[in-house]
Image (cartoon, rainbow, N blue to C red):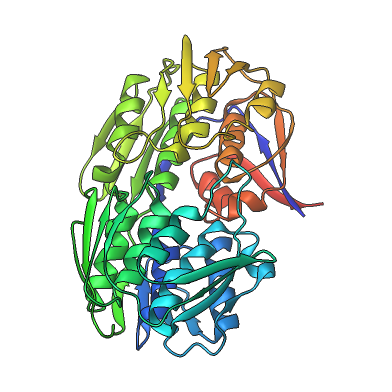
Length: 419
């Protein structure tokens, strides 16, 4: 088991390259099931969730080649096993994304109910009901989803709530369905647009990505394709906060500021100076203490839930009082007790945390509970006086590519050690 040891108090400065998006790469890898040839991906992030997805697909019969330059060729065109086993699925909720593609191409699928971060209930009922609307027969038994169909038939899908993974699952299934499928109340995230762009290269007929209504005209087959995964906007936001929380200046490369506007606007409210162009973002705090900002999470293009914990860490040492309200997941404040152990003044009131900024935090021994909470603890450790030790950092490895190495390039005193 690994842990991170951070000696805080260093102002971060420098340049860091942002990796490809986890939340874009995973659905694209599952989309390879639909193709009759290999998918060649560039800018693939080296993350444990990507490794888990590759192991899952390989267990089903896929083959892949991973190059040192972050390019990946995966051939999932001839699966020999249409089962997503519990041992592989249990650590990653995105595994549910195998269901739609397998059902569309092979007319059957057996997938273990997914796991992932313990940040609240994420029911799969939206996925299952929509697949049933498309003509699938589904039942759940002994922790597995069993799905069969004679032929998926296009129809109107109306999601009761916005769901990124449900939108992705259904639009992938619809690519090989007969006729037109229209998804209403679809998620609008940039990662969905990236998935759709890859599917279109494979021969899919899809319109409306990036809006609340996506239409998919089914085709008889999809081919292999080449695609470059979009940059990870959550990793980018995390490094911008690393600069802001330490009073530093950091330039990010391989980013798209257009997908991060809500986060950039909040960072500007803290007093940070931000410049950007098509490929880079620079944040300069000029040594100033950030101002506290209020945050309310919501679906894209509003403020992302995946940045809530990081802004909570920033507000802990900011000047003033702030309120952070979480509307997406009901249990996404597990970082609050850990930050409080560092001297943060935090009060949880329902789905809102009230934060009274303190001038400094003190290093402590901390326990990571989920991916983004882990990132918030790292950020707090960077700003704290003394040494912070963070246990269970495997959570971080699910979504951050070599985080300690990138932070070292910016001047952080951080080491990964093994117990």
